[in-house]
Each structure stands twice: as structure tokens, then as C-alpha cells.
Image (cartoon, rainbow, N blue to C red; front, side):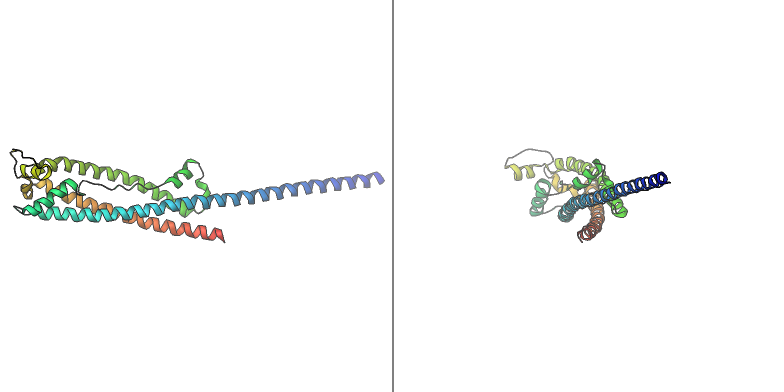
Length: 243
């Protein structure tokens, strides 16, 4: 009987020890999980803060491109207005020559998003750090749409290059070369720059460039709205985490 009581005590003691060890392990795992969750939350805020900076940079870039587009479209309108005249005045021909030599007509402003923060997140395989599924999806959609915009820009580049190759020879005349270089030449197309009002390709190219600007403007406007939405959601996440 004494031995049975002693064995029972040892058994209960052993069970108690095991229970304490299990409880200790569970507590350690729980603390480790809390610590990992805390560390991941800190990493998430750091990542989102970097992405936010990138989005602000994109906003600044879009604003600059929008101003450029406005100036370029105004220049296209002025060119069309001048070449609509049968024989433009010398003042207008000087203006037209200036547009085709030092104007913005052949320039393009590309929008390439600054995606360092998002790229680091993807390449490191840590996309799951962003817990908010809606925010994660919106970021993915935004950077996919900016990548797709590069293809549209290539079309605009190609059209602009073709127009430049077409129109530059038409501006080369005795008159224009004298204006630009001060030298006298004997070319057959003495006043080609005047005969653009019946040049269908020139007029259609200018109209196409104007429409491309409108299209790009609508795309950039949509991206701007997406950026504002993303920044608001990121700010909400960061501000909530700080409390």
C-alpha cells in the first residue's frame, strides 16, 4: 500500500512536470509568434513607407508630364494654325521654323513609375508582409498598369520619329537654311515650308500626335487617381500601426 501511494505521488509529480514543460513550450511559442508578428508588422510599415515615397515621386513626375503635354498640344495647335495659311507671313514662318528646330514637337516625356520599394518586395518573396489584401491587390494592379503603359509609349515614340523624318526635309529650303546658318544655297524647293497647308500627311500626323496626347493624359489621370487612393490606404495603415 505504501509503495502504491509512493508510485502514485511520483506519477502525479511526473505528469505535473510534463504539463509544466508543455505549458512552457506553448508560452515560448506564443511569445515567439508575437515577436515574429511584431517584427513583420515593423517590416510591413518600412516597406509601405518606401512604396509611399515612390508613389509621391510618381505623382510629381505625372504633374510634370501633364504640364509638358499642355505646352506641346498648344504648340501643335499653333503649327496647324500657321500652316493653314496659304502663304504665311515671314514672322509666322520664323515661328514655324522655330517649332521644327527648337520646339517640343519632337520631344516625348515618358512615364516610368519608380517601383524600387515594390520590386524589392516582390523579388525578396515578402509580398505576404502586406496583410491588407485590398491594398496588396491595388498595388499589384497599379504596377502592372504602369508596365503596360511602356508599350503605348513605344507607339508614340515611333510615330514621332516617323513624323520627324518626314517633316524635317520639308523645312529645308534656301530661306530656312539662310535663317539657320546664314549661308546661301541653291535648292530647288526654295519655299517648301510654305506649302504645308495642303500636305495631308503633315496635318494628319499633327492631329494624331494631338490625339495621342489626349489619350496619354487620360491614362495618366487614371494613374494619378490610383496613386491618391493607394497613398490614402497606406497612410491609414501606417497611422493605425503607430497607435
